[in-house]
Image 1 (cartoon, helix red, strand yellow):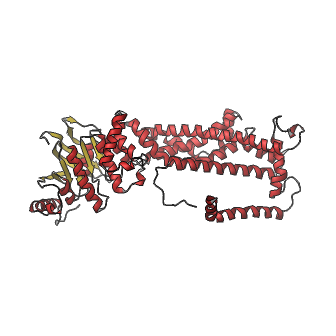
Image 2 (image 1 turned 90 degrees about the vertical axis):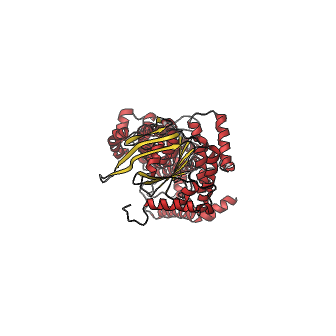
Image 3 (image 1 turned 180 degrees about the vertical axis):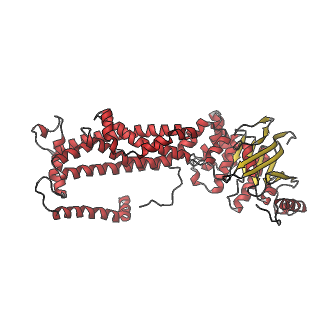
Length: 289
Length: 258
């Protein structure tokens, strides 16, 4: 209880902004001109989003189990709505998690391989710049042409998107490791392998976490984009289905879910960061809010 | 202390190419022998080759001419026989105090039991036994310097190279650590080469002062003063004489392009 009170005392103003925004949305919903279509108000008010729109999500439950399937003439049910949200969310979360892990592994691994040798760095420098400049979302069709509109295709696309960032981030981070740590380790008798494992790897952790936060947003865009354009399931696909019939309320609802997932993944990563980087000297409260 | 030279530097040259294209002679035909167990201070102004000489000894800087022998073997790169304490803070922030002190022993692949014993012993010696599990960020600058000293001593190197290690510390902490280093040196009979630009520091520490100027060793002074070298000893005629000689070499009073 004490913790909550402190949190409220420090953050009440942030909380207030959120409440005001929610209220403003509601007012906008009532002020906006009425749409000719009953199911698609231009700014759907909350009671619409959490009522008909939420119930309507059950349209996207397509497995004949646990709840009726509206596509086959079944009833719209709240159970079906939650099952549909859960199922498609799980698919998307699975794709994004696996894609992130694959991309991080490959990007960091390759980065480490290249980073300590000048010749290697020069070898990859040019193609890497091209890769970095290539707009990620524009490459979705090409990826789908190569790999089809499958789970694997979405995973590899996410992995590619974040992998490039990790690759560049790792090379920069290794270049930024203070020379004195390596010198010092060498005078203590450390070989190249020990230097990699016990100096370079821990020293680049802070910068790698910056890459992770960067790729978190990127990975969400990539996975939603891949589903939006091709893969026939997942949160991104639900937005397309909603769009087919101009279900604005459902679009808002799905977007809200994405926001919740994104915030949750950010919070989890923040926790992991605090634990892994416990050794780091505190920065002078610069980023506090 | 024996008379056989542990380190011998023969006509060492080191020429740097400056960005502007100008060449700089950081070391100019340096010849030097250092006995086992000696405490040598390299004294000189900034940019006159002290650090270059020390880094060359450590194997972190390649000579452009000449050779450095340790126990009659030419050195090729850094090695665990020559530990180094830097002016900057080199204590690894991502390792606990214990792991920092154990770093050299682990890198050399020593057995676990030996590592544990040695680390405990050196943590005790520097008075940081209670901080074994702390992160370096939780220590003061002086304490971190003790960790660095414990780490190189624990590493077992017979030769310890110190590049203005106390330069960034406050006066009292510095005097404290000087006294402490002397005690460790007397107890362990390691050979120490210590770079400083501070005449007083050299007087407190050194058995032998080598004065460097423009990449050369211009004087070689035996500091035959009794220990501990407190204020009174440093005020004796012999100490004042050494100070005057050194100041003369460093070119104070004459205008030089430094």
